[in-house]
Each structure stands twice: as C-alpha cells, then as structure tokens.
Length: 607
Image (cartoon, rainbow, N blue to C red; front, side, top):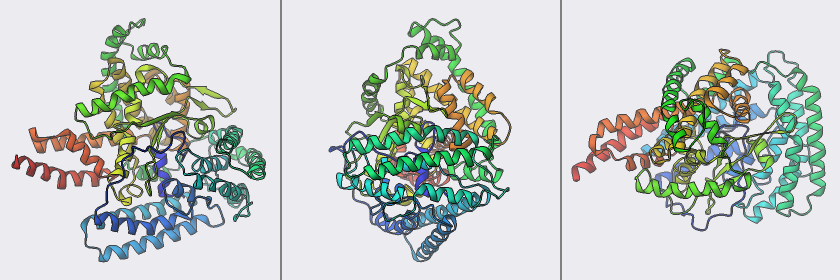
C-alpha cells in the first residue's frame, strides 16, 4: 500500500532512493508570488479532491501534512491490523462518491479531473491488492520516523506547527494518543504473515542498508529537536532511541536471515510498478529504444570529448575517451564547504539565459539550493527536489538538495565525485532547479493548477520527462564541459531505461550492470551503488521514466512544430506544458492537440 501523495516525493530525484518528505534550511521567501485566483472550475475540482484526500490522509498523515493538508501534523502512519484492507475500503468509498459526482457534473475540465481521481483511486487499490497478495510487509521504521519528524522540523514550517513535532514523536513511541509504538506495530504486521511461504521477502541489500542507517537516523532526529529547541522531548527521545535500536536488533534476528538475495520483483509487481510510474509500453521495447539512445548519445560524447579536453587543457591519453575526459574534469573538484556558493554562481546565470532565449517564463526571485544533512543523505542519497506545500502555501519555496555521500550497510559512507566539480553544475541545476523540477512545481502552486492535476495526476514520466527536457533546452547555452556532462546524464538515463527492466526481468546481473554504469557511463562507486539499489529495491520501475518521458515530450513537440510550421512558439509551448500540471502523456498530448494548436493557429490568423 503506497498512498498516492507518496509518489510525488519518490519521483523528484536525480536518482531515487527512499522517500524524504522535508523542507529545511531556508525561510519562506517574502518575494514569492502568491498563487493567482483559481478559476471557478478549479475551485469546484479542488472541493471534489477533498473526498480522496481525506480518505487517504488517515493512512499517510505525514505526507498529507507535508503537502499542506491541515489537521495532520501530530498524526503518524497507520500500521494497525488490516491496514491494507481498510485502506482499500476507504479508497473505494471515496472513488464511488467521485463517480456519483461525475454522473451529474457538466463542466468538461471538472469532469476530466474527476476521471483522473477515479483512475488514481483504482490504481491505488490495485497496487494495494498486489502488494498484500505478493509481498511480506516489512517497513524501514527508523526512516519513517526520521522523515516524519523532519517534515515538521524545518525553517519553512511555522513555529506553531513545529511544536506539533513533539506530539508526533510521542505518537511514534506510544506515549501520546497512540499507545502502541510504531515499531511494535511494524513487527506485528511482519510476524503475522512471515509463515506464508508464497510471499516475497525483502531483499538482503535493503535490510542491511536499513540496519546500517539506524544510528544515523537517531542522531539526525536528536539534532532536529536540538536545533528547533523543542522542549520537553527528552523522555520521548530516549524512548525513540531505545525502540529504534530494538527494532534494528529484531530485524537483524528475524528479517535478515530470510531476506532474499534475488532482487527481481515478481512479474506482476514489476508490471504494476511500471504502470504506476507512467511507463505504458512493454519493458523489452523500452530496453530496445534505450539501447539506440545509449549508442547515439555515446557517439555524440566521443565527438565532443576532444573539444572539451582541448578547451580545458586536460591531459588524457585518448581525447575521444569521454569517460577519461570526464574523470579528468572531476579532478577539479570543489570542497563541500564551497559547493553551495559555487552552484549559486551558475544558478544565478541560468535565469537570465532562460529569459533571453525565451525558453519558458520564470519567477523574479532566486531558487533555493542547499546541501543535505548526514541523516537526510541516508534517507535520500542523491540530488533531489523537495516541493513546497501544494495546499495552503504562504510563500514557501521548493528546494534543490545536494547530498555529498551515500551510506553503506556498515554505517560508513561512499563519497560522491559526480556532483562536486564545476562542469556538472549546469545540467544538475537545470534538472532539479530551473527550468526543471523547481519551475514545474512552482508553476503548480502559483498558476492555480487543480489538485487533481498535481497530487492525483502524478506520474514520474511527466515529472522526470519534463526535467530531462529542461536539461536539453539549456544545453546549447552552456560551456563545452557543461554540454559534455549534460550528455553524460542523458547517457545515464538511457542506461537506466535499459538496466532497470533488465535487472527485474533477469536479463543481466548486478555486477555487470554496475560495470556498465562505472565504465561506460563514468559514474563513481557511490553513484553506481545508489543507482543499483534504486533499480532493485528502492524504486524498481521508476528509472526508465526519465528517458521515456523525455521521448514523449520530444515526440509531442515535433508533432506540434509540424502542425504550426513557422508559427511555432517555443515559449508558448513550454508554458502550456507547465500549465497542465502533471497530466500523464496521453492527456498532455490531447491537451496540446485540442487546445494549444488550435489557439496558436487562431492567434496567427489575427496577426
């Protein structure tokens, strides 16, 4: 069972690990634009959306609280008996209520939103049924607790809401209105089904990694309570530490011995995972398309690498060896304490380029970028974007977060060299910041897009496709070394679309997949581990959404350019895409064909 809103956080990463739902380090920007007044149909649609929000909020209150739904700040995840059955019953009840609304609703926009929410509810029910039938329910409780508390303890959260963190902590440890610790509930859910030999166990790799992170999460939680001076928390914090360590010992004794070494998902689950992320083609066809993209991108990198080597005076034996050139660029790395300032110099250059080249409209305020904490990096060990609240936003901004290491199962860390050198700043900032994720989610708040088209239309193909498309839009205006790294990241997305399905279909082993990522793409050991963990247990199926989403947008753009000829306006096209929220590719294409193209043709006639 994975509530719908959780999918948004899972998607917004360069390389997704476990979800982190948090906002830290920057106060709400006073200059942030207030959301524009919503059209009447959006207001009506959002009223209907409350039906589905309320039905799911009981089961994932931390996520609802993070996205701005009021009334859930002190609540904690439901791991009580029959949680999956209760979730499905509540969701089905909400779906049926929405179907009744659809039967009488006449506004075409609202009807489409109702259809989106009904489909989202059906998908959520299907996923819950599959997981209950096929998977043994094991939870990384230390991460759940850390993420839930970090979601409240942030600079952007008002002080009166931060105070609710103590109530949430008490509920986690059974000292509040919830009297059973979440660790005991998680143990019970696992134990009651552990004897069912038909169920798929968690992977040994994910259990070992979870055990290695326990102390990091405990320290991270204590640091948050110290930073925000939450008084009266010592008793609950002591209980939390004892319970989380006990949970780790229990998992080592009861979960790890039977954890599977084969990381392939059952075929039904993998197919459903692809569907939930928005990949609607056969995975073997995705592999073939990605192989072609990989070869073409590699050839382009071989052509560009000598120019980069010459321009940067790099000493490499073979200047056509793009991996050697990239590794030489990485030698000119930046210390961690300089990363934010050095990234800021490029971030401040990007907005003027976007405006000058008329790529897309951007806000008249700076975006937020920061480094991740040690505990945050354990929960989300890759560059990612944390969206601001979608509901009740009072000026909070989303954030581009850059971790500097990947935790290992022994509690140590592998250091990245993939994100701390000058050339990488361009494409990473374009993806996580502008015109990528930051701009897309800012648009959802400031342009008054309906909740159905944000929280419930979510699909990773749209989100990651837009971010990769945003990278490509910026490439012509970047320095040569930035262009080479942009191609490297595109090569990585092609590798993902090959390796994720190949690993889950049993067509390649982890070691060989790792060799491709290290030797052919040029990733560090840290990034390679993080990638492989994602394909096999953190978010199997999601990795192909970057390449596939990018391809769908390119197809749609070419179709639109042909339809409009020399009247095609890139700025108008890109703005229109953002105005559609997170519509899946089929609905996005329908909107472009039926709304954008006719409107542009009519505008051209007037001129």
